[in-house]
Length: 154
Image (cartoon, rainbow, N blue to C red; front, top):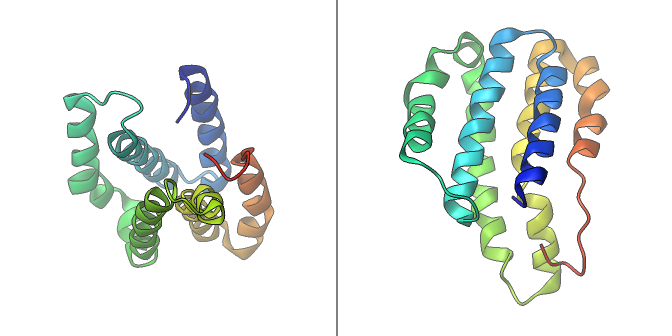
């Protein structure tokens, strides 16, 4: 993800969206914060656009191996959250393949599907506030992550 300034702005926006979606549920908020951290480390490792320290890798590994499982929100809702995790990783891998494709349409779709993980925010909004809260925040979340794409090139 872009420059240091762009990363800082994104971090602020992610924090705001996490607060909005978790609907006052501190365990849900902690789950999303931890998950966002792991996603950032994973993205940096794959894209190789920012260095990742051993300390960051160890923290991400701990979150995945223990932190998430000890979180009461995740423990209660894992049967609904894990399928979104699975599809998010799968979609992220597909987007990385298509990002370098010769086909302009595939490159454009790669830009869109790379953010499938954002669907987790809608699921958390649903779990913390039901259908009404999910619909209240859904478009706000999507608008927060809109990005310009020029000629299908990321």
